[in-house]
Each structure stands twice: as C-alpha cells, then as structure tokens.
Length: 131
Image 1 (cartoon, one colour):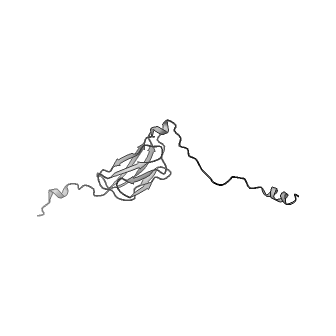
Image 2: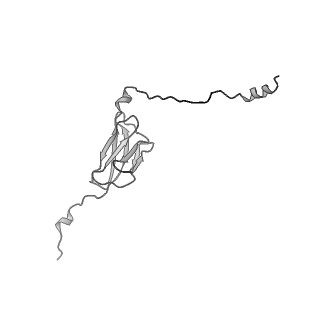
Image 3: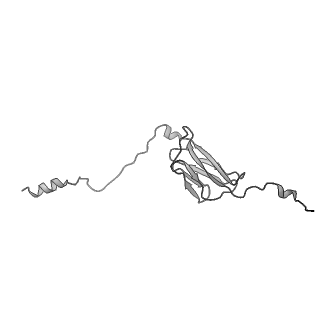
C-alpha cells in the first residue's frame, strides 16, 4: 500500500517567469518599435523590435516590475504574476500630454570656425589661368 501526501498534489507556484509580448500605441493600435524595457531596481533590459515584439532576457519572480518607456509616451509599469512560467503580454502605451499639445524641443549649435563652401573643381581649374 502506498501513502499519498495530499500537500504534494497541490499546484506549486511558478518560481520564475519568462516575459515576452508586444508593445502598441493605445490610441491607434500601431506597434511601437525600439521601446525600452527594463527591470525596475535591476540592470537587465531589452528593446522591442521593429514590429513592437520583445522577449525579456532573464527569468523574473512574482512581484518584479518591468518598466516600458519610449519617447513621447507615458512610462508603463507591469508587475509580474507567477501564474505561469511563460507570459505573453500586450502593453498599450499612452501618448504623453506634452506631445499632444505640440511642444517642440529645439537646440542651438555653436561653432568657432568660419563657414565657407569649398570651390568646385571647375572654379579651381579656371583660377589657374587667371592673371
């Protein structure tokens, strides 16, 4: 006769979770290429590809927070759940208010050299025959 431990038949929580998914614009559903994804309080991170797909490079634990950032969009936080070993998620990012209002960032370039265009080959040749 074999004795069965009832506690061993319960489903154990997943120790580590792999995250992958897609990042899209919440307004129009278009993918967001080259968005940054990083572990909050950690050093691991990755970027989405040109179709908005990503695969985080390390396994995560329940409660870890992933940060999603992209220029012109509000940062998005995703808290990892330990219900399965692989999670395929869809992140919908919202535009930041400053971009919707039409703000533009401009800069200035300083140079210490005088700008002058170089003479063309034809002007250099004709200058040889002048007095």
